[in-house]
View (tube, one colour):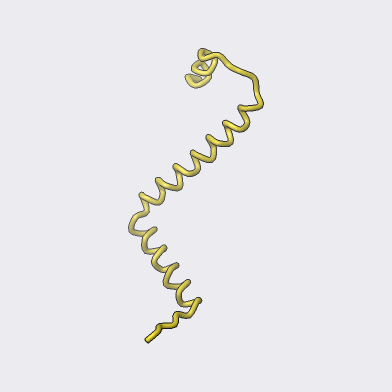
Length: 66
């Protein structure tokens, strides 16, 4: 016997499962999203820096120390 699943029902079930996962493991998903955003920001900073001049180690650390 073959079971046929309605595509809309499957989407609804999938959405419900995702919502439940987000609610129960909120901190895990939060950490993943934050890490992904940091990766994107770092990637963009690297791309922007590729076209700029060079800086000495001291200049970099002076800037980081603010």
